[in-house]
Length: 136
Image (cartoon, rainbow, N blue to C red; front, side):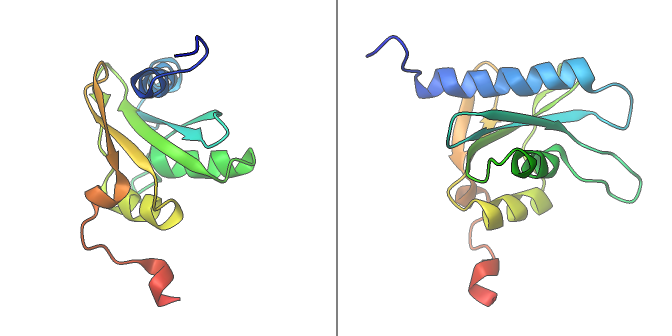
């Protein structure tokens, strides 16, 4: 294996660390409590925070989609969300699962512990899902 080649676990841990750093550094107060990090196909890591609001502000996973698009990263391959206060990885909510699947049906979601994340295809998080593209 070449010295510059990352294993899947190393790449996943790097993504978890990016989300954890964002959550612990920038999630201050009740308005921002979860960070997401996504890896684009070109290797870039994009991070974002949720925007809590009593009307149902967007989750960190959805904010990271907009941040990625604003940076020209339209092809995401892996995503993870991490809560502040050392709470670790949090799975995407139902709305996020549907949106992530609609935008990136081949996306991988990291779940489990921050030290040993488990990579799961988004389609496994939404069995028998509604496929928006099929109804356009």
